[in-house]
Amino acid sequence: MPFSEFGLEEGILRAIKKVGYARPTPVQSAAIPKVMRGDDITAIAQTGTGKTAAFVLPMLHRLSLRKAENRLHGTLALILAPTRELAIQITESIHSYGRHLSIRVAAIYGGVDENSQIRAARKGANIIVATPGRLIDLLGRHKLDFSRLEVLVLDEADRMLHMGFLPDIETIVAALPKRRQTLMFSATFPREVESLAKRFQHEPKRVQVGAKNNPAETVKQAVYEVPPHLKDAMLLALLKDEAFTRVLVFVRLKDGANRLTEILRNEKISVTRLHSGRTQEKRIKALADFKSGAVRVLVATDLAARGIDIDGVSHVVNYDFPVNPEDYIHRIGRTGRAEHEGEAVSFVPKGDLNLLGILEMTIGQRLPRKKLRSFDYYAKSPAIVIPPAKKDWRKRTRERDVSKPQKPATRPAKKVGKKFPKSR
Ligand code: AMP
Image (cartoon, rainbow, N blue to C red):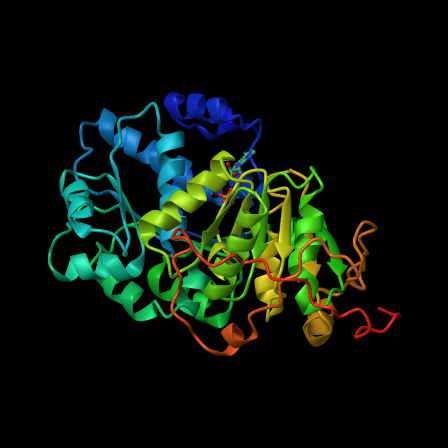
């Protein structure tokens, strides 16, 4: 069914055309007609499936009807999302799909000054996109009015519960009108999410389209068995390949992200970093620079693994192998999105082979082992070798500000040639 058959307002259809969507994705085809009818839905869909438009488009349609009836006053829709990044991204989508409708949107999330957010909400935001923590704070101080609310969306419900937001969500929902449409989106459907659906929804219709979009099946994957001290050199060798146009590199720790960013910068690679130790402004800028293509590489912790939608990520590199399989799936799902091709490569030192084994059992496939022809695995002449800062792995050190001049990050290559058996 094409977009034109959903009965969406003409301005919304024009905006869809402008963003270049030829036809609805499966979750949109399944969800939009139900949401347009006014049903509550529980959709099991991962990010990358087009789920944001599945709830935003009918919401915009509803608001444009209210506008035509001259009843578009106050906040009619609330979207709760687990992270600030996702809240910002949803807000951007609303602006994009709603470009021809004059509808006000406010994003409310922590880590930045609250006053401008309160002002935006009070000026009559028709849609509020929020993370639960900051919202509950403002709600408790009577800064928000939800008495006219018609639609509630819980996006990435499983993730919000996982992050311990259940008490906040319960308090927020208790402050909303009982008569409303409640839409719930979740990548998985554990018992806790089911219980949330039972309590907050009215005869919800189930929408399930996840299986086809399992990134473990659609993203091209490879594993490089590489010793820890050669991971930097390996990454630099891979980045010599021009096919690595927009590269998301995952590390485990903030310090690791800072260190690797510094190394890449020293090698004249345009790079930025994203982790929870940075200010919100810097996080937003890092993501914006990566999205716009101003920088080629984003070094990030798992903060960037979920929900974040970045167009055209050519490669995901698991510089540090993820500790659990769920994180792996989320990380590699950042590439190969919306019908684009994507590749995910993982560095697996000997010490992480057990994690790789657990992952392969979980996803039920053996990942191809690869070797890079141009790379000397026995480290006789790696381009650059910087031993990993081992202490950083155990000890939490304060984040260094790498924008200030630092001691040179490159140290002389260590002779390690004989340590690794030839069978590797
Ligand atoms: P989401 O799952 O909402 O994060 O969306 C993932 C990506 O799919 C975003 O980059 C959207 O712009 C894109 N997208 C959403 N709907 C469509 C569509 N019907 N056709 C092509 N791309 C889409």
